[in-house]
Amino acid sequence: MLILSEKEIQRLYTMEDAISDVKEMLHQKQSGNVNTPERTVLSFPHDDASILYMPSAEERAAAVKVVSIFPHNPALGKPTTQGVMIFTDTKTGEHRMLCSATYLTRLRTGALSAIAADYLAKREASRLAVIGTGAMAREQVAGMLAVREIEHIFLYNRTRSKAEHFALDMQRMNSCWKGKVHIVDDANEAVRQADIVVCSTRSEQPVFSSRALQPGTHVSAIGSYLPHMRELDVETIVMADRIVVDTVEGAKHEAGELIQAAESGKWSFSRIDAEIGELVTGEKAGRQHEQEITLFKSVGAAFYDLAVAMGVYQKATELGAGQEIEL
Image 1: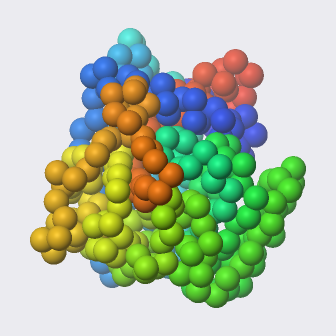
Image 2 (image 1 turned 180 degrees about the vertical axis):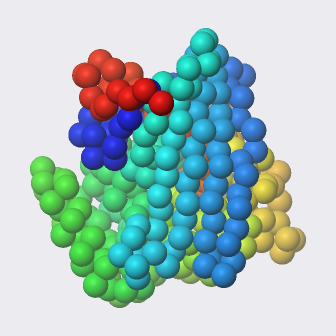
């Protein structure tokens, strides 16, 4: 079995790789070639924490990701999100790889947001607002930089010092990017100036007001993944001209913003325009005009993890990366 650490994965597998592999998996999913059972979520309310078990398979390979999300861990000097992945050859049943999935989770989520933005954001979009500068935010920025010529990034975090630290880290990681970073003290201020808004928080209350949204804005909400969470207010859901989700079933069960909007009676799940895979295959259209407010809501799905697991395994074997062990 091949063992790959997070640092090794970061060295060999890029955002561009992830975007390509996730798009290919979306084609496979739309063709009916992917089996993805509903994920199992174990909750630990006393720690506001959860552990997710996420299996998926296609005809060549299968993967199971186990990811834990413990938001109080930073106070202990430990990461909020930790994950591992087992990758299996479905021709022989051999478990080919065990790898860290923490970075891969962030990377595939950033790739998914980037793919959605490529279809839903204005072509000339150059101003990005990032609401929440936690673990997921770095790859969200990297994904947007991969699909749009971003010139200004507006950062908001409830704790300003975290936004400042994130800004320095981001500029170090993207040393060739020549744009400007602005740290603001109000989320609405960031949203008002943006063509693209990314929300990556675990909030249970809306993180900005719908009144701050300008015509033509694209919103990507990827932080909340349980029914009681929500980053967007009901008014944002209602006013969106085009709503795309990663999967309709996942949205109905886990997208707190959409669930609460439906329960309010002001919106219905029938107003979902497409799944992201339908945009990639051309079955459904993306942005229709410049003034549209578009929304992508993602709660995650295991076949995205399978996509990047397959890509990482292929690159690692080609380059001789990782360590082979016998169990």
